[in-house]
Length: 372
Ligand code: CO8
Image 1 (cartoon, rainbow, N blue to C red):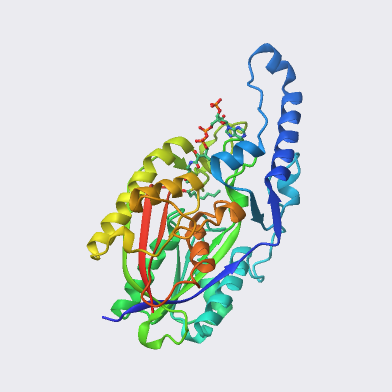
Image 2: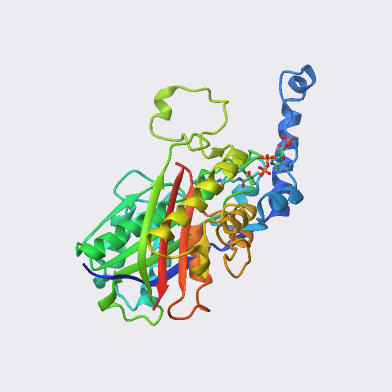
C-alpha cells in the first residue's frame, strides 16, 4: 500500500464578474417585461406576477456578493438571461476542457509534473457539456497525459468523491499520479429567471494532483489520512434536464428543467448530516473536531458553514473555516477546493485539515489531510 499525497492545486477564474447589483438590475428588468407581457392575465388573476429580487436579501440569506462567469452579456440581457457561447467545431478544444487544462497546468506546475507523469485523469463536475467522448479523455490528450480518464458526477460532491477514487488508485498502485479537474460552468445550467436561485452560482475550474508520497517533490504536500463518502436520496435539489426531455413532450411554457431546490429544507437537513459525517470520520481516524486546524467546507451558504462549524467545535471563525463564496458564489463541486487552494499557506507541518463537500443527492464527502 502506498501513501497518497495532494501535491498541487490550480484554479481557473473566469474573466467576468457579476455583482449582486448588476444581477438584480437585469432580473428586475426581466420581471417587469414579464409582468407587462402578462398584464391582462395578471389583472384577471390567472397569472402570478413576478416579484423583484433584492441585493439585501441575497447578501443576508446567502453571504454571496458577486460571482465570476465565462460570459456575462447574455446573462444580463433581460431578453435572454443565459450566457452566449460560440459553438466550437469537433477539431477545437471544447470549452470545459479549455478551462480544465488551464487549472490543470497550474496544479501540475505546483506539483512539478508534466503530462507524461500523469496516468489517470478524472473530470468531476456537476454537469458535463456532452455525453461523450468523456471530457477527461479530451483533457488527457490536451495535456499529453497517459493512462486513462473518465468523467464522474456527484453534483456538489464531485471533487471529494473524485479525491477518494484518486487516493484509492494511488494507494493500491493502479495509478501513480492522478489529475482531478472540476470545471463548473454553472452559468449554463442555472435558471437565471428564477428569483429563488438566480443569485446562487458562479463559474470556475479547480484542479488537484494526487500522487504517491515517494514521487512527490513539491514543497507543499498534504498526506491524505482518510476519505469518507456518503449519499442519501433527496428530491430537494434537482436538475431534470437530460436526454429524455425531448421524448417527454412536456409543456414548453413550463419552467426550465435545470437546477431547482427547496433551499430552506436543504439548509435544515444538510447541516446536521454534514456535521455528523465529519465528526464520525474524525473519530474513525482517532481525532477530535477541535484537533483540526482548518476546515475547507463546501461553499453554498455562509450561515450553513457557520452552523456546521459550531456543531463541530463550538464556534465559527474565518480562520478555522475560510469563506470564498462571498467572491465566487456557490461553484458546486469546486467550492471546497477553491477554499483549500487559497487558504492553506499559513498552515505548518503536522497541521490537520478537512476538505468537505455537501449537496445534491444528498451527498457528503470528507477528506482528512495532514501538512507534511
Ligand atoms: N430576492 C428577494 N426575496 C427573495 C429572493 C430574492 N432573490 N429569493 C427568495 N426571496 C423571498 C422568498 O420568496 C421568501 O418570501 P416569503 O417569506 O414571502 O415566502 C423569502 O425571500 C425567504 O425565502 P427562502 O425561505 O427561500 O430564503 P432562505 O432564507 O432559505 O434563503 C437560500 C434561500 C439562500 C437558497 C438558502 O435556503 C440556502 O442557501 N439553502 C442551502 C442551499 C444549498 O446548500 N443548496 C445546495 C445546492 S448546490 C448543489 O448541491 C449542487 C447542485 C449542482 C450545481 C448546479 C449549478 C447550477
